[in-house]
Image 1 (tube, rainbow, N blue to C red):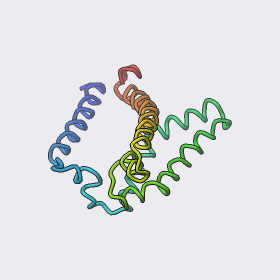
Image 2 (image 1 turned 180 degrees about the vertical axis):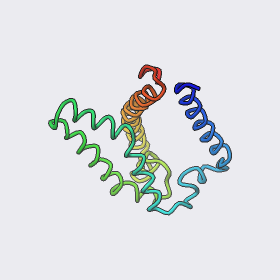
Image 3 (image 1 turned 45 degrees about the vertical axis):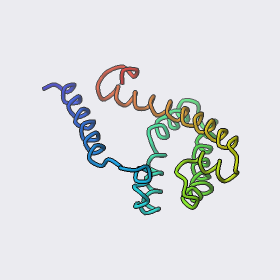
Image 4 (image 1 turned 90 degrees about the horizontal axis):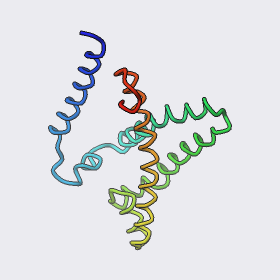
Length: 154
């Protein structure tokens, strides 16, 4: 068996395992979907959020930005990190306190305004799209190297 077939086997087995876990641990209600029905300790939930933040978009994109353009663009890295810290310290605890699951729910109810909720949704869509572009590009590079295909195919 050549290396390409072994790579495909491992990638396929990983996908099958994750799909199997998702089907086995199916949530019955919306409250069970978010943070496991509040059964996850806040420190553990914080560590999971931090692990998500330290993703391919963070490491590959930010490291590449500094490597190719120099330290002049390290301000992006500081903004990325500072934004995460501000989110974790100033917004996340209040989501739990208010019993809300999304930022737009929290903002809309906190300020009693459907307009504020709409602004929060637009901001989150823009930020999420920017994040996903970096994440998918990084995943394409990683899969492209592992499967020996182009970055676009990866």
